[in-house]
Image (cartoon, rainbow, N blue to C red; front, side, top):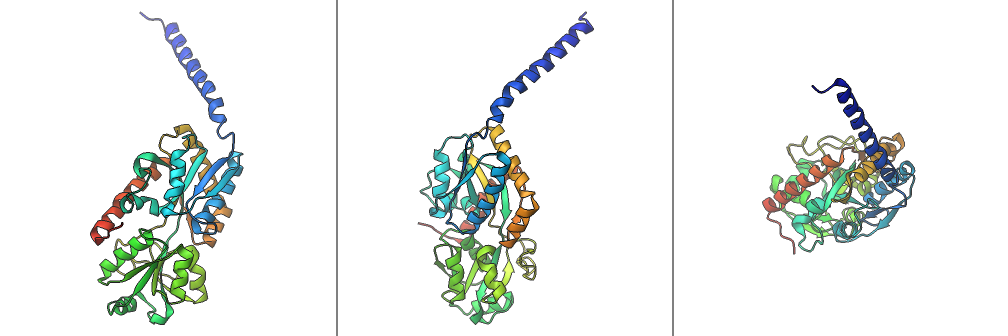
Length: 326
């Protein structure tokens, strides 16, 4: 028979080995981060992703004890910034803020230098940013029903901050559901697309809340609906598309942090924990609300899976709408 003393000795040895592994691994983990981290943004300074990214970067830097340096690499629907991160080392020192468009470009762009699903993994969501359905006041359509009736007579143009954007796909999904036809007019950025509605160059924009909300509050344009399943605290009087009878018609211009897919789990966990801690700060929630965003906390695995689901969702929208992109 094997003695109880032998079992005890083996158990103690196993515990010591476990401690040894932990003690050996801890210094390596503690070294990250030991230098500044670069956060790539695929948008221009002052945009919603830039604003939200800077708020989070500032708080994460304090939590991590290292600067989080913003680098704006705008253009190509955010793919330039994403490419820079794919080409960098998988060491957690290059991260990218992605938005909903990054789950659309795998369908709409054939020139990407990366595979969104294979080359990236999520660190975590940052925020939910709803889209506001805003129209020019000269249309004389104070509600969605009157807008649809007016749109059926023709000559409705809508702006987008780029071909293949979530704003374009959401508008196309709506027009199909409403049984109307409209013409897309691309602009450079959400600010310009919003100004086009104000000046009546176009009649409609499914706008991100940050560029549009101040003009809605001032009365320069009218908001007929919001794209998220629930109303926004930033615009509580604006009904959802679901409330207006468009069941299932939702869209969220989400913002999230991503790293290369082969980044070590330990590093992703450090980043995720710092992001979560930052998003739980009341001051962050308040600053987000000021630009119409809501903090959204999830895990790296949940974000990765969500991004993959979004690719499928928007690919189906493109196929059903019969959209083509050169």
